[in-house]
Image (tube, rainbow, N blue to C red; front, side):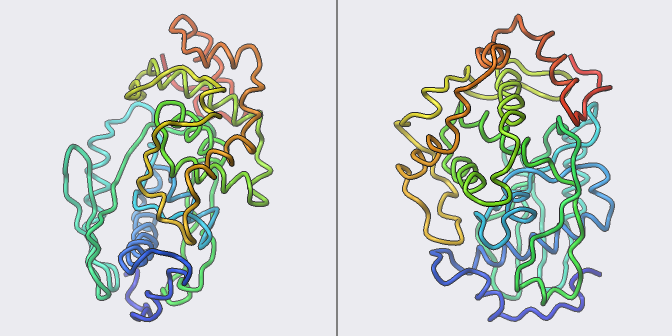
Length: 314
């Protein structure tokens, strides 16, 4: 069983949070517990059904100890036509387990699975939110965990996990920032743009996928993509400009002191000004005109390294 031979101690868990961070022991417990749980889910074959994505994937497989802590476990289904509610129940069921010093207890609240963690080192009041989304648009890649000193005490080797490509992770965050000013997404975007080698991402591909996602956020795509709440067309000037109100939930979950919101806005302007340099078709998709559905679907199906070439989407 994963965790049976661990050599974690309270001291090692406490040192998992860097000294300059404002975070406490609860976040260290959750972050380490996530590693145990993800390894267990991979061993149980769950990652044959889903792909890792989102902020936690960005931390675990790209940023390591230098990334933002994320409490959510975001997954994308492998198949297009799947009952995500039923699949979420299956994944949650696999999360009801004790692994080494951590006990995981899933429970449904407000139509979403939450996973509570109790441990020998404390029981965080925060829970891990489990979210099952529709499939990736680009073919996933296998990603290795970025090593941290704490992992040497686990007693097992963390597995490679199928992960959404970095370009699509960034595109999703760009699209979400067009409808909601989430500081955690802005922080992730700025970190990637400033950090080699990730900063060498394909900007044209990210922009293209982002504009397509903006359109789908507005109008949906069957069978799995519902229109997003508060969706709106993409406006480069507004996206790159000052925002009257930021949702700063989780912005404090950084390994170091969080940036000011003004610094985040400045980082977005400097590192993502190329979002304004759209092609004519990208600009058209960004207007979210419902008459463009056929063109948008064709563009999604023909993306380079696309995962939906043969999918029955409409």
